[in-house]
Length: 285
Length: 267
Image 1 (cartoon, each protein chain N blue to C red):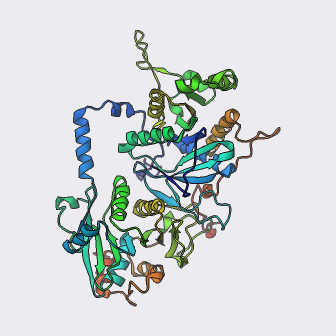
Image 2: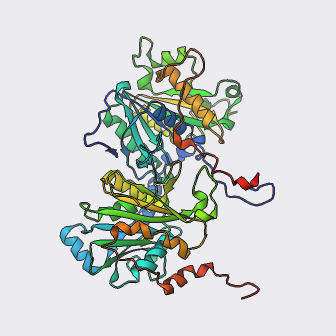
């Protein structure tokens, strides 16, 4: 849609498609074959490293007390800069998937390289019951349910607690008051019925909702009656930044014993993550 | 797949199910919200399926701080046993590739739960009306053969609706202008799965009524009130006061439909 001033806006229409489902009914064998192949190609797979897959095979499910899932650039950056740089965290598996924006499946059997978008699992030698999943790639809407179902399905559900860290722009946060920049970034929480621990931040107020991977994971946990909590960070900075990342610190306070947070972020990592903020070429640099 | 909120699965035998079709202006979904909120319906469980886009939030019908913390998902079932009524609320669009699979899941759940009848709340693009439709009321209904001939009172559901002055959705000519073709078909543009689900229910011999409203996108809250008042004329969910309209209660999640507060400095 073009406005009066000529900008072109991509307007999301709530209307559903026209009455064109008649065609879908009349598909032939070839159409079905194509459909099946596309579905197969878009399937989500979990790959474990040899040591872990052995353990998974013997007991069928992975024994795990805490699963931390970090989705989005700031949450993933927080995990990199505050947790993963300390000793002993190793990559133990990854989720391989293919869609229009994540073409990882050209090499489905190799893990994403450092810095490459993907969903990677990390585990610590000294405390193998904590698993961190860092998710930096795009997951299509039709793959979200499958992702949550497969990841949670591969883990022993007894005694498992799920923590999701996620971020979204402040513009998506609805409040009757005007939000100025002083209050940001801030955390809001959403929990399943079986999660009973105290929260370090307020609950997400209606009419705010969450979508995407965090929503898929929470839905799956809710129906499996797993205790799960989501910490959504609202930030007014477009690119990943250190202040937003620091906001997640209280979210992991209940896991203090299992996951050691560095008091200060790893500068090298932080610089790498926030480099996109830098002005690359202007008149003065 | 229906996942009960309680340890014991609820029994829906003989209940009336009301469910929205995700359609133009989300009118059906808004109307379902009004019913759940006004009748203080209790959440019976989640409709957990891979056919809908995931979504989560806190209790959309909370009345204060105490009951705000309740995770709600993209599709949930609410019920009122004393009224023999259940509402399946759908909060997100159906994935385009999973339309068929969603209908299948829904139909099989309705059948196994033993609902006596299903009411589908839907809407249809207002700009697709023909001249006759333009001049009449914007509300239409459709009944499956199984419900058409049932024995509600002495005249059947169809008779009841006719006596209320309701109009059936017109069938349109498949090839307008071609006089020697008299193929008539159902045409519900913008109705999402309405037509296909109606056809499924016809062939499965299920009792279903479709309530349709012609509307356009925009602020569709008034449309939702129109549709739910119309439904109330038939099902008498709420007593109509002698004067004024039925006191439907908008849920708390309808706040801020048009965005957050504005900066006070601009005035």
